[in-house]
Each structure stands twice: as structure tokens, then as C-alpha cells.
Image 1 (cartoon, rainbow, N blue to C red):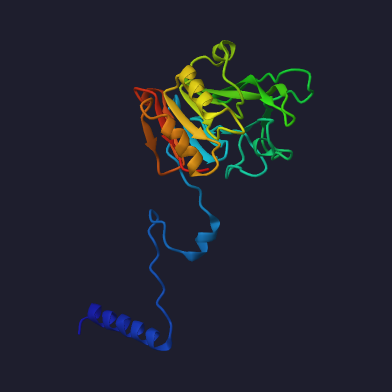
Image 2 (image 1 turned 45 degrees about the vertical axis):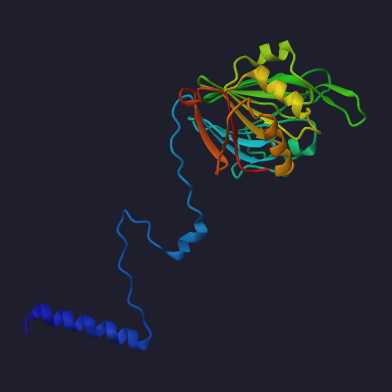
Amino acid sequence: MNLSRTFGLLAFAGIVLSAALGFAPAPARAQSNQPGCRPEMASLGPPIHRAQLAKDEARLTFVGHATFLIETPGGVKIATDYNDYVRPPVTPDIATMNKAHSTHNSRNPDPAIKHVLPGWDLSGQGAAQHDLTFGDVRVRNVPTNIRTYEGGTDYDGNSIFVFEIGELCIAHLGHLHHPLEPGHLRALGRVDIVLFPVDGSYTLDQTGMLDVLKSIQARVMIPMHFFGGGTLERFLARTQGLWPVERREQPTITLGKATLPATPTMIVLPGH
């Protein structure tokens, strides 16, 4: 019997003996380029590596209600209408808030947030004024009015927030209560992507919101702030013949200046 055959028989005998005694053979070491299947690693929650964004691109995730997580090529993270109920899974660098309801602002924002931008003047003396450049994003606001609980008007009580990332311009309409006047549209400038409420009751009615979208003329329109699928579907029914509608399966979408739809398009992200 040659030496290699002898070692082979001894190894096989060792495996049989281990099985008989209830021991499992030690697994082979995984190669360095393999993730392995070690159960102790499951609780560590390794980070999800997202594809790098190109210049003039942004990644938007519909967190829910009126909150989106906006990510820039430089890694800046922004949360819109940041509140204490619906929050993104990461701490944003910038949080914008609106006054209308507690689901649009936070009394206890994460202290790790670098810039918290309320859409109303905390002193009550006028309109909020924001024009912040942080990393590769510029954030500015356009004040709007809201109804009070008593039926009056809270002048400059909210803001449309505008996010400029390279040549890409995103507008979050917040808790918009009224049609936009020419002065609002001039202040907004060109809008590529608009995030808008469609509930039709707490905010502007659905017919009025259609008029707002027609006046903004954004290439991408993403609805938010709807209560149940029925509200959203009623709004989408009103858009028939106006714009094509794309329904996405994932709440995250990457949009770039060079890859915007050729014609204005409604894009529906899953959420509530």
C-alpha cells in the first residue's frame, strides 16, 4: 500500500469515528473573498453598500407620510418633514420641518443632526429664511401660508424646501394649503423633481394640487401624504390623460439630471 493511500484511509476512518461519537468535522476555512455563513455574524448587521452616485444624481427613499431621505453624491443625507413618528433609518445631516402638524416636525430632533431647519420663524416675527450650503447640496426655502385650527391663516407658517444637488433641483411642497402665486413660482425657479401631498383635505384639495403641478412643470412628480391607497388612487385617476404613471416596487429611486424622463412623469413609490 503506498503512503498517500494510507493517509487517505486514515482520514476516512477519522471522519467515520467522529460521526459515530456525535462530533461533526470542522468546516473548511472560507476563502478571503467569500462571505461565509457564520451565524454569529447575523447579529452584526453589516452595512448595505449602495452604488456610488454620479454628479447631478440623487437617491430618494420614501420613508412614509411626508418624509423622504435624500442622499447626495457627496454622502450628505437629508430628511424632509422630520418628526418623532416617521423617521429614516439613519441620522440625517440636515432635517427640514414644517409647522402644520406633529407628523411634520419634531420637538426632540436627534442632537447628532448638524442642521435642523424649521419652515417657520420660531420667534413668530415673520417668515423663515434658509439658504444653506452643506457639502454638495444647497437647501433653501420658499415660505407659504397654512390654515389655523380655528379656520384663520397662519402667514408664512410653512415652507417649500428646495434642494439643489449639482444641476438637479428637488422641491418638497410640505404641507401646502393654497395654490402657488407667481411670486412663489419665481422663487422656486426650475424644478426637476417635485414631492407633493395628495390627501386633498388636510392640505390643498386634489384639483388645486393638479393646478400646482401644472404650474411647476417638473419632469418627475412623486406623491406623498396620502391616507390609504384609496386617496392615492383617486388622485391618480384625476391625472389620466395628463401624465404617464410609473409604479415602482421599491421605495428607493435614483434620479439624475441626464436621465430624467423626456416628458413629465408621475412616479409612485410604495409607502403611505
